[in-house]
Image (tube, rainbow, N blue to C red; front, side, top):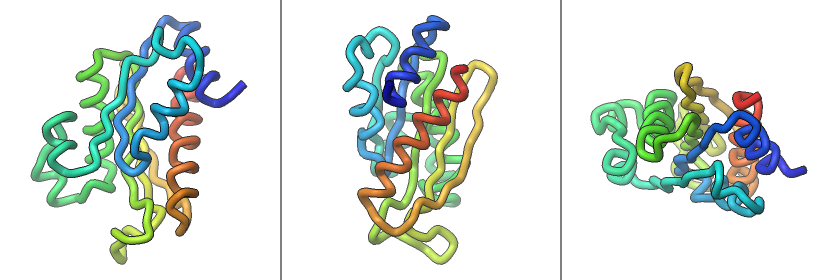
Length: 155
């Protein structure tokens, strides 16, 4: 059973619904989830918010925090997760923002730096990762890591 199928099975077992907010993964998490038959019953939707403007308009991310912390930060990814949870009215939402590469890095945020947050009825958890220098690999690893964190949160 795929990781996405496990997430949906856990959501189904508890009667919960989930949503996603993606930046660096560009909708890959949504693609993985919607490839599972019957996913529409528990997966409500996704926002791919790549630009700052999309993060503020679609997900309600605070513009000042974006400008101060940058899109790849704990604060921003937490707001993205909460924004997706509220936008779609779900029990759980996961958000991902990172530097897939090859460009976009800074001295304190190298390529592969990724933040993932999970919003649940109990609150928001955020996690930082560094996946490496390969863009496709970063997108893949960030997507699977996000799904695995969501799977664990739903158990």
